[in-house]
Length: 212
Image (cartoon, rainbow, N blue to C red; front, side, top):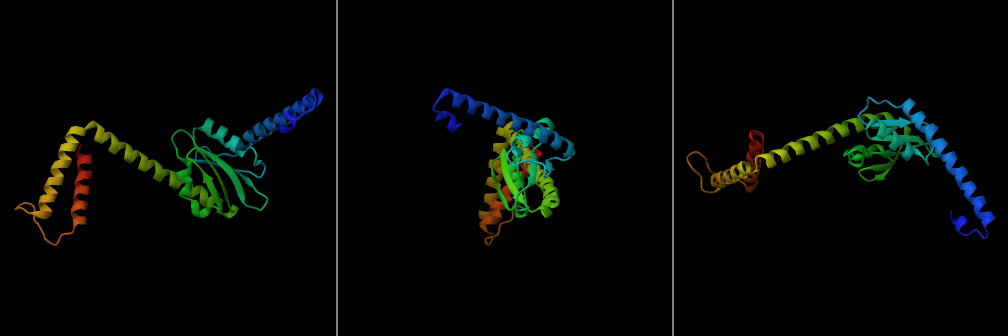
């Protein structure tokens, strides 16, 4: 591209354009072939798809991962063998799945790792591949469970906001009474720590969410 801008005449510019078109055509054909290879090798029963093949080219693994993930609607990682013998590749997320956080749960199995919620790059010893596959599955389950619980709590707060706030205020007052002045129904101890008070408020908070 730089050479094209620096071309001294139109004949040289046309020659460079033709060369660029040939390179792009070869790249598209390579991507299509490796995409078909990935579809053949993948296991789409996995919650997160991992494809490993020495035929994959480092320059297009990200494109292949994105296409495989899109057609299966799942986060996908495509790996190939690097020159030093390690597996190296790219991953692409799908929808709201945070592939970076999920893979971070397997960090001890990786040599290199980086990226963001939608795309990652990584490398790992080949002997860690199967363990990485299993741990990634567990990591995604944990992440999904946490997200679901957070969503339920958020919805509970929104749907029962006025009742919820009133109940929380009442609970805080009752616990404060218990740990400061005491009552016949709420035994008080002068030696009770402040952390115990905070803990009980938190427990009452959770019970209100469940009841609501």
